[in-house]
Length: 484
Figure 1 (cartoon, rainbow, N blue to C red):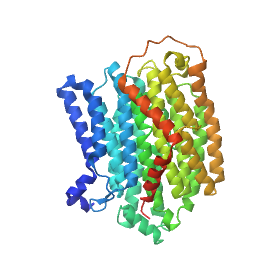
Figure 2 (cartoon, rainbow, N blue to C red):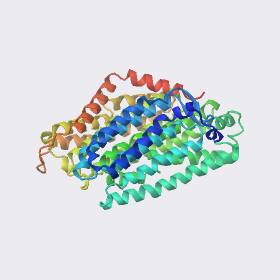
Figure 3 (cartoon, one colour):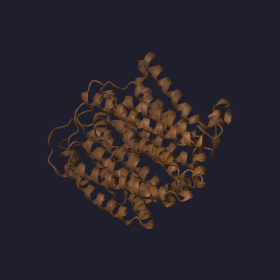
Figure 4 (cartoon, rainbow, N blue to C red):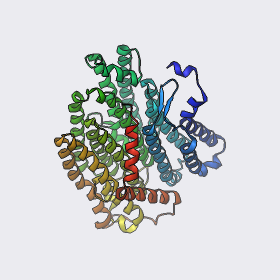
């Protein structure tokens, strides 16, 4: 980490977007304290800041801070996902938070700080940098989980997420310390060199360290058996915040896992890890889908759905193949658009953030609120993996990569899980359009920001499902930027 003692302008430019997001978050907190009359403008300030961060720079390939931080097409891919998730969550949050008088600047600041942390985490070529980014992301999310602190479920969600997240962080720290103790360095390049020379793979302590690091990442992804936090956190957390939590942080953790696993693949050391990743994938797909069938709360259903969806991601990780990693990135991009659409639509169709979100409340909503109901329907079809949605493209690429790698069992389990998932995804569609209304709802208020989010998400789900080539090219360039 001596590279941080001598900082050049080029180093600062590499982390320019993250720095800008942090400064903007601080500015929003100060504005909320001293100029509360500006609260209605906070969403627009946040959106402008996200756009500025996107064009600020820091995306030129190369290393900074003496190699501790590295920019590449892969980090650029994740940056775009993170900024998109912040923008979409902001678009969907304004009306809900304003209605409950919880539209403080801190909410948007926490979104920005969490995004900055996950962007830094992915850029880390040093496990210490990865850990700093991981904690920066997580601490902001812990606070967001308990945003409605007067709601018992939200307080419980924040406490559970904090305690279990801290436990996962100790795993990562133990793995980091073990790697440093065995190699004298925390750089991923050093780890790759040691494994390539054969000196690391025969070291059981180093393998235990890698296992601890991957376990911590599995917690952030919510793979079985590291999933216990997800249902309660999803249910208690404010819905726009869950839309962010369930997508961008998971994508960042998956990409860090890809970077760690890519240190094993060139040396031919991925094979011993394949059974473990395969077991995690199978358990997550089966458990997530089967338990989701029994859920009657929409947010809990989407929590277990998310566990299953990350099981499909684990199939891509288990192959240790470039084509599978490409499919995984496409899947993550599609999952971001689809899951954010689902949560924002659920929020729009519910009785409020302080109330439960039972499936029965959706009855007849297709006739009373057709716009939001149509978005939720499209999201359910994409999560099922039906064409012509982007969810179909992501699953197709992951399953095909598994077949090409000879992992037929994983592909069959993935297909079976998708068939099972149709039972609860299409049940939502049935309630929306075929059930009689169970309650009368007020006419929806015009909300420009939420409407913009629905239009953008609908376009992303359909356009990327019909014309996936640009996304495929970006994913291919991202994977090819991994060190060989």
